[in-house]
Length: 280
Image 1 (cartoon, rainbow, N blue to C red):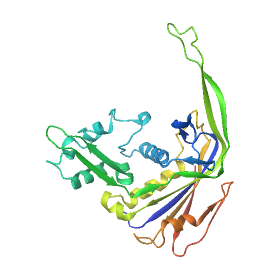
Image 2 (image 1 turned 45 degrees about the vertical axis):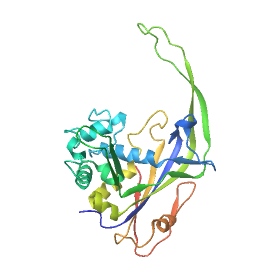
Image 3 (image 1 turned 90 degrees about the vertical axis):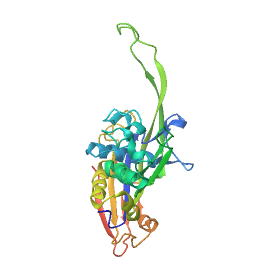
Image 4 (image 1 turned 120 degrees about the vertical axis):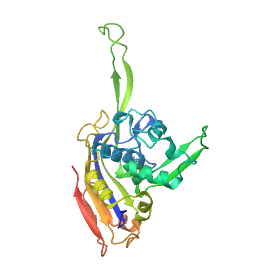
């Protein structure tokens, strides 16, 4: 059964001496907007949700290279593989209609029924080109810091063993490492029942998302984000009493005021259920 009630949510994220989301077009410096506020892109946040879902043994279509479990070299290969995907016939319009293909994909992969996906395939000998676009009910915005962030950059050297027996040291290479000294970021999201009806996203799926958001950065440590430098301090979870919701997402999100130290206030909206979940 698909989702019964509209849901809005917010994440309050604390960053301390970490690069929460490097920009590859800017030397991997932490992303900032024109006013200097730090940014974590929606794509980055969805990647981490997918990774946590995968840690929870959910079937994921868009897998990162580091967490790939099936050895598939591409999304197309995964989609058409008879063992890990749906098989080629699922995307052959001569053998399967688009609605059936959507249903199969959503039943197979959690992230497809949550975030949606575009399946685009070129022409082949037995089928014309087909493109299947699925809109998912779960949306999440980029996270922005409350105040402009201070970015510290340091020069580093990297050394690797030379050729041969490894006794000779290779040439040092110079590089830069960047970090946000400290910041509080806030991201907002929503889950829409009208779109959940098409993908089959259920109340149980929503509970899975809610259970994983508090530990979004657990198991995500790296040189750029050392263990403990990224933390979800609080998840705010609003549940409406109907599919259409009593209030717009904009009004719900605006009811939350977050301070620079991570404390917050929620303006009460009548008849709207709100749950505050501590981060890990």
